[in-house]
Length: 197
Image (cartoon, rainbow, N blue to C red; front, side):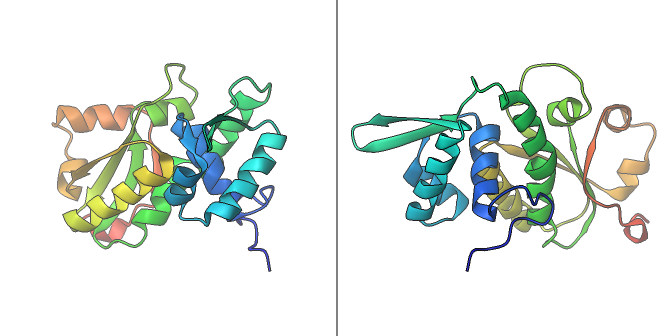
């Protein structure tokens, strides 16, 4: 029995297809099918079949180096930019981080800031190289490291967490905090008002 399509984006065939699209389109690198399979935690055979479907649809381009099949996003496809935008909004950093961080205690709120948030809100600029993550709260640092590393692996981008106490987040005399309040942010986890004391 085939796994159901992701609830948030039922146009996709499977969870595997969604993970491959996130890794290929957002990652911006060329990877072997075996590396893709390892990165998304899937069987190499299933990954190869899904890559073949994506290649047939012109979503990814492949080339062979010896016996290795390398895969990258097909940036020349006429639908590349809209598809990239759609995958970013529906399955991108906010969703991936929400899945990884929801397992942790001690987080009052989590938001993406910096260039990812700016692009999400329509500001033009170069594609982001990494994901800046604001955590308000006091999660276990080791657990947070593990969660952000898992997200970085899925996104094929570094994730840079900044942890701030609820008291500091409310402070108005901190220049860094004022800057964060004034710039675009994308919510990852909802604010837990009961923990902001």
